[in-house]
Length: 194
Ligand code: G4P
Image 1 (cartoon, protein in one colour):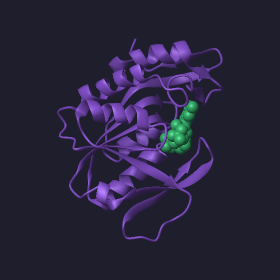
Image 2 (tube, protein in one colour):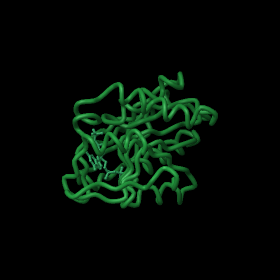
Image 3 (tube, protein in one colour):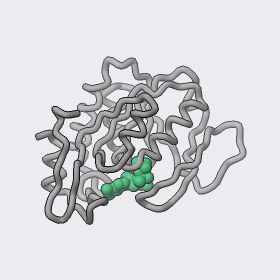
Image 4 (cartoon, helix red, strand yellow):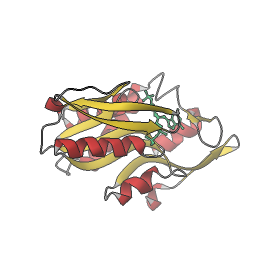
């Protein structure tokens, strides 16, 4: 069993069949030793892919993506969630819908932090519907950058995010893939099937 699966079983809690509570180690209290292990795992997977920049979305993506950027010795760019559109030539923006939280935001980044030609690794804490990842792809297209990888800490494989990203021609590398969950327990898709 992989380290992230063990930690989910130890400290995660399925609120229902859709939402996994991980606020004791990932998105409220953050276990930085675990994040270091996360960063090293992503760095190991992507060290030979010619990545030039790591990108994430505020806020819960910052810890895992930051540790990956540190391990890879690369800059980290944090895409912002804005409430409204900005009419400025200095930013790239695209609307993203969050089905889990039933909200919408304007994914925003200053153009100067995504110069054309960068090879970008996108890292996020959760993959559910894939809306955030598709938004990042639109931003990278606007910037003339290439998406070189999608690294996810916890993938909810019973939701269509992975499939939607793969349909766009990109691979997903997840540290834990949840096959299903309920109050009775959590099951994973084993790493050998990844
Ligand atoms: P998608 O991008 O794959 O479509 O995912 P979706 O919009 O449905 O969900 C994105 C937000 O919901 C993210 O938070 C993500 O961390 C959170 N989320 C999704 N599934 C779960 C879950 O099972 N458990 C928990 N705890 N969170 C989940 P966010 O809006 O980006 O907020 P932030 O915490 O990063 O600020």
